[in-house]
Length: 147
Ligand code: CMP
Image (tube, rainbow, N blue to C red; front, side, top):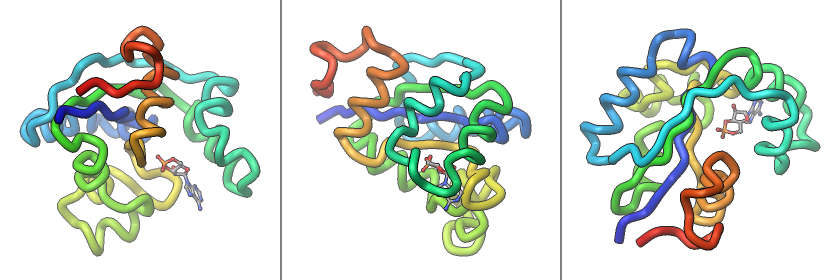
């Protein structure tokens, strides 16, 4: 059963010129890129997207980071896309990823717990919310994943 997930190349990934390498890995790994957009997110958009983290101490820094430059937002499709994209990007902390998951995307282009160069939806619910947040016309009915 085919599944959709949301991938973001964050500002450090874009400024470090990792977009084409990351897209290459995505296609080599059997995903198709359903749609993509390069956007410079504003504070309101980041605050809304990351609402679940709004009470965390790192939130102001996260907003500053995510608004610091353009991001590449992609909807990826594949069987088991959500879990497989999470596996490909590696652990949240890029510093740890370099040790424990050296072949992961975050090990390649990330720096630390915050500047981890890519995002991936962590569940079916998050994927549906995140995809409809950036691409409101993509999912029929708004919350139902394609299959
Ligand atoms: P991601 O999992 O894509 O979405 C939430 C982001 O917040 C995460 O990537 C990191 O960029 C950042 N983040 C998560 N935890 C921390 C933390 N403890 N300190 C700083 N940034 C964090």
